[in-house]
Image (cartoon, rainbow, N blue to C red; front, side, top):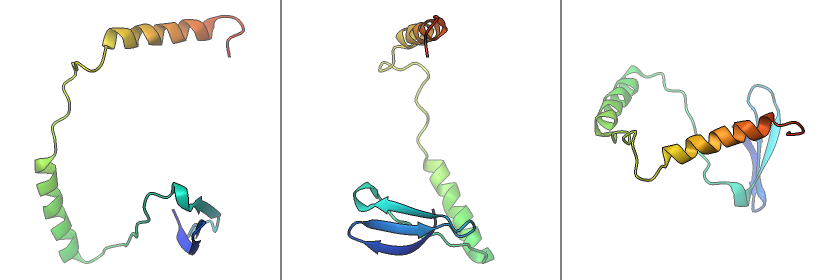
Length: 92
């Protein structure tokens, strides 16, 4: 996050607004650049809250705890195996 100082075909240089630290992001690693604004207008805030309620009402329900795509027993065995291996002498 930061203020864009320079951008070209190779990437983007940003500067943190508070610390002044600079970062370089190579163009081939950038997915998106978004702008952020502070909103203090009560009318806009109220519109946002109303829109948020609509979005929350349409939100997808979480997946059930039992899933045909996850083998919970196997995951537990792998976890125990990992723990056992990490407790052996010489394990890092």
